[in-house]
Length: 319
Ligand SMILES: [Fe+2]
Image (cartoon, rainbow, N blue to C red; front, side):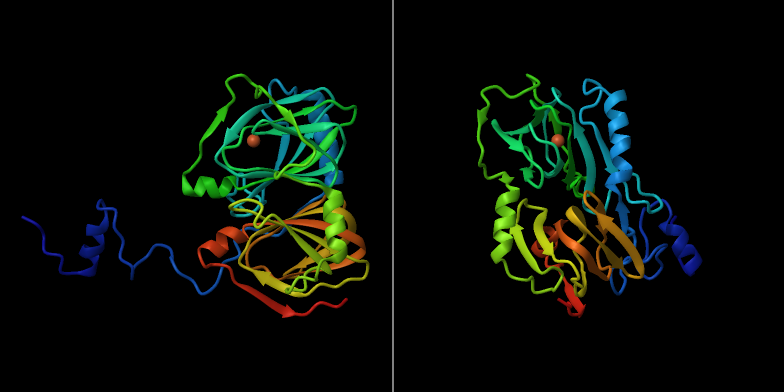
């Protein structure tokens, strides 16, 4: 016969084994007034990482590494992988004569090229050169490989939505059965390639963004990927951006220039090739020392599509 649950103690005891929990008696809260500060702001310095990548280039052959990359793991306790909650960034190196075999995965990916010419990416059978400042897209489930025909080491920053895919349990990954795609066609222009010279030209006539976070800004694609928006920003010497926060998570890649980003009260200095994580709902602003170009990768499309994009300008920009 079932025992009568005539006390809270007995009631809570009855929760055990049924995998239920009272909404009034949670072990941890489920709702809170505004986004919590889980992931931390952080900067990875290209000058620090490049020698490590070079050493890996000598020690780790491409035959044993599917991709020779260094993932930027947000240093918050308990995190093993992500750069911000929804995205991961990594530095990657391809050396002359190397090939990274074709594979495909459900995560969306993009690359922002830092240095080196003569390296090509093949996406769904189309081969395009990757040059410094270019941004190349690898949409979900597109076959992709990389190879170098040149004589320069090629360094770039990858950004992927893998942590979001982990959360949603939608991971599929496979290697190409022939290692590389057959019947590759060369193309200089492609819907998956945003050329640096085109970005610079478009920025000449672009407007300042309404949020005051750059002097000029363009968007690559609309959005570039289903889950990731890309904005190229130009900030001139002496520019002081607005103070701003957004529920979108952001990863900044510095293409050129020098300055600092103040996130909450933390001052983060940056220069060419550095990557800066600005997690959701952190108040931040930029101060620029020399003409700077940055690529902002954000999960704005995800936030917008689920009505979760909120933005706030706390103080305006000073041009
Ligand atoms: Fe990949």
